[in-house]
Figure (cartoon, helix red, strand yellow):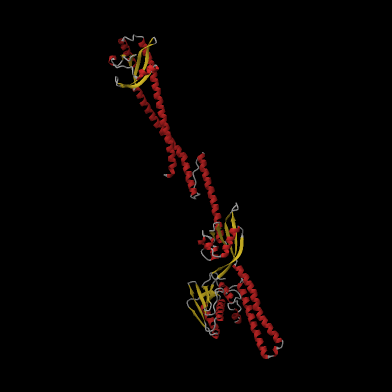
Length: 594
């Protein structure tokens, strides 16, 4: 019903105005006709009265019998009441009554008006005729002397009948005209309001986001032009909206999938946009940061300081910051820029986080590698050179010294060879063309072999070496490399476990698609600060003990690369003074075996 409200109101307005105009017009026409008919009747009575006065003035005014005959005869001819009145108001002749029985007529309104204006008329009820009459009176003169009055009375029933007929005709005419106007108005309203309502419907649909809505274009007039304009507007809005949606989707995809973290901060300090990369950077659900103040959710003072500097200076800031997350330290290149409007007013701040942790690690590894390799090579080379010079200086002549120095030179050579072997091995594993010898491998058998191989070394250090294997431990892998992984980890545990300790190896299925190997020792343990670095090259927890034991510092780095080559994961847990546990998870089946 609401959509027809305008049409209903417009129709009611038009018909109401039309009806009022017709009623007013009918009233004016009726009044004009009544006035015209009354004037016409008055003119006729004036002429007839003048004629009667002329007839009466020719007779003797005192001869009442003769006047009575004239009055009766004229009354019959004119079908009107005729009365002759003397100047004192006495009726001397009356067509419809006995003059002697009539009262004085001097005070009658038409007579009084005649005395004042020379003529007079009045409409009133007649007790004699029992009807309403129109009286018209004129003075009678005899040689310029007023001798009386002549009065003519006509029933106005005819005037009432004419008025009734007139109003009947007017009512019928107005009713017919109103019916025709109602029909024409309804048709015109439908023709004009229909397209407007349709255009309104389309406009409302466009407001609600339905840009497929269209209206009918069937006319060539202004209403048709409006419909076409609405359709063109809807089409343009549809195209603009589509382009905007495509651009917005592209922008959202770009922002959400860019490798760097992105944060928008408004001038009020609340975060208005944050992408998925920030979740990985800050290692928490950053979706909760939206519409919250930046200093309430960002706990790193370095980042807060960058934002505050941009707010104060409205200048770009670029800094490298180091952020600590649990056991890991990560490095970021933070670029902050103010967002300025065309008028030069600050609208917000954009922060971009580039993770340069790997670059920092590579840089540190390069430095450590050069330093460590130089140091590791320098020690055996210096020993070999020193003892060789001592032998050449004469110590070779003494058998005991010669054997002792040659033994030291041999051990240092072995150490140097082991270092070079591990460096070449690690370098080969890291090459892109490195491939594993994939085959079905029973991890339980490998663990049993390794335990049997290293049991003697454990007994020498008085370390209890135990293992447990159960379930299906057959996987896709390289048995030689898996043996290398287990040997390195067990050897590493034996190295850092004091006498009287234990080392426990366990291999069990993990879920349905993988197995888990656990190697636990009761050694010196690793501090929380050192855990993130134990897989780096040449990194030693206890540098003196490791070097004295002949270790190169490359064992865990080799282990990590071999586990990753098997598409597995390695994890370590440790407590200082209580021991260390390594967890390795390997998939039973590898989808793509290279």
